[in-house]
Image (cartoon, rainbow, N blue to C red; front, side, top):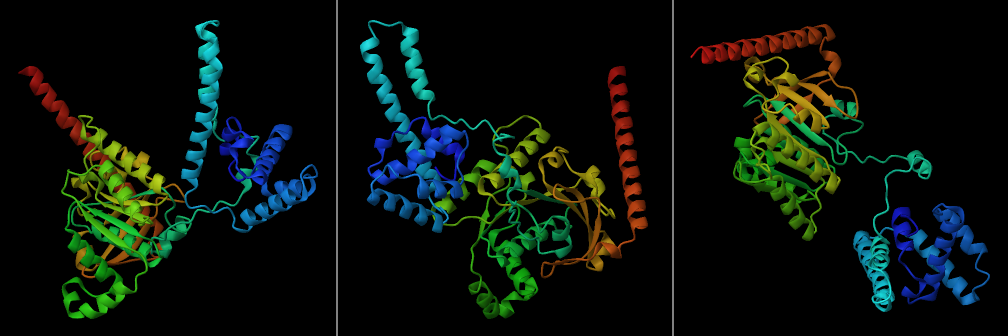
Length: 442
């Protein structure tokens, strides 16, 4: 009640002092409610401290000591309660039921003497008390809230250059998408994200719809140790020691393609939570291979729904969600992949918080090179190209400083990419027009 204004306001409508067994808790609640009623504001912890030090004269000395000791206790522990939501829900449920019972007792004698509307109003008023009265952010009442420090708690990408433009990494609930052509190494990027989160002491849950769970686990072994995947068996002992040194959990869950839905993932995460495994990062390899909870008939609408659901899961658990998406055919062997090469549903861009493309031409693969292009970035600048070194044999990806790439070259490549995209779109339009004309003639 002290730290949550909205909850306290709801409880004030249905809570009676006698619900508390302990008298000093009745006094404490009364002081909160009296201040709220008198000044129209929820008191801060500092204000409550002042009130209970100076405004308990009507209580006996023993109660005064108990109230002050209680306040000192909850202040010293900073009110961190693991089952906070359960306590709130249970308290509100109890108080609202008690209020409804009182209303039912009140209307019984009125059944034969009052109109139906009056009786219904008494019951309706009782059921509405304690309901959610949070109308949103109140610009005036919640003035102080917008000046509190914004603690974002980002998860590092493991690449300092990318962290620099994303304010330290990916934030709570961010949906991160890597777009690339088939065989470019998108899944390796997801393993890199997961390994970076593990190194920061985060639990990682990795869902795979394309590769087996053991293959993904071997890639993590290689990424974390630096040993090439096909040589891991020679260093089994060293790998085992490294795994033993990891403080958090890596869970790799395999589903057949097109069988799992975002609801499947949500249910699995809930089961993990029941066993004490709270995710610090969620990885989906990859979202396009999920099945939509509701079929909309068109694939683009299904994909949009899938991405929205994944972002909602990230918001629910307060962690970033990483996934990859297939580029269209024009993305193959391109120097820079832009948003024009996003396959199937452009609406992915609207839902996602951070999108970058992975480009690796035939020459890049031969020289272990490539480039990232930042397509979208809610937390910083975009439109930048970062050269990378990419060794798929040990899932080692390094991002080089942007300054090593000439801005003139980048601009020219982007202009060419846009020109090619417009040309391809025009050709598709011409082909569709030709087919329509032939159909009409027939």
